[in-house]
Amino acid sequence: MKSENLLRMDNTGIVVESLDAAIEFFVELGMSLEGRMMIEGEWAGRVTGLGNQAVEIAMLVTPDGHSRLELSRLVRPATVADHREAPVNALGYLRVMFTVADLGATLGRLYPLGAKLVGEVVRYEDSYKLCYIRGPEGILIGLAEPLSAITTPDWPAS
Image: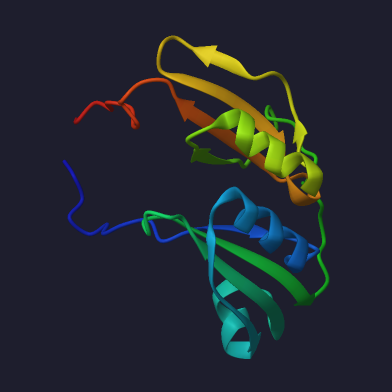
């Protein structure tokens, strides 16, 4: 039975060391910066369990306005772990997937900003050209170019 309580997914969050470099990368990919601000205080730490925290965030949005990426730079407390280079078979593995109109052109724009191809650009049937790249600070990003008029998969409705 479907839950009537879930309304939508608002964003995916990624903690970064350099907020400026991450913003530049995702803007070059095609996202727009909606806003940037500092969030601090004990109230914020009650949500995250980190106590009296300070975090600078940037919210980016996709061109269609439906998906958002929240980038966060922790000021305090200090970060305690680094998962930036975790392989795709690591537990808790995180990647963000984007659909692009021209995979080759997108890679050409992102390579000068430090993007590195993880494996190869592959073709999935007659549907997509796909690849994974490491973006700023090793963030794993999937890129997919539709090969036909179908731009989204036909997921089962159950």
